[in-house]
Length: 191
Image 1: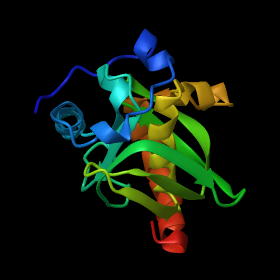
Image 2 (image 1 turned 60 degrees about the vertical axis):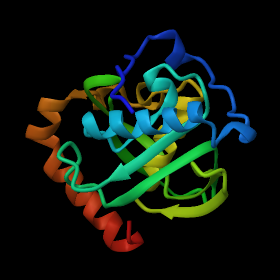
Image 3 (image 1 turned 180 degrees about the vertical axis):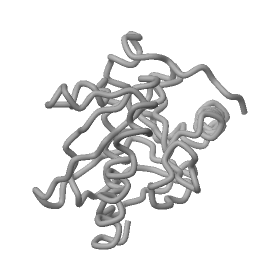
């Protein structure tokens, strides 16, 4: 287990489409080490999630976890979840505007349109196939991490460039209003 360096936007590994993990190898020491490193790095950086290619592992896996995260005080809790070879399916056309940040795009935020109802499928760290639905604000976190595995970072999805802001400016001028929007989504969708 180790905290790895988080690659920054523009790095070739982040721009490439990640390779699937051979499901026969999920329980191998190598893949289990990747999972442990992702968890350690995500927690060390106060991330809500992290994709393997963000730490230089060019394979399709990510972790998500939100528990009283100081970077995202408005985010609802998400238990630690590992998804290997993830697939995201949109369950409706309902969308919302998520103000996103990223460990690979330090000190920057921007608004991205995300689907409100998704199905996530893939394998857990024990090699068991899992499928679950995510609705509401938390759906953005899963879509954000899955995008990484296709070489897409949140700035690539921002359609209104005037929404780009620094973390400091977001916290000072925009976070309170955005937190109210999140609160309304959570009240309606439960997450």
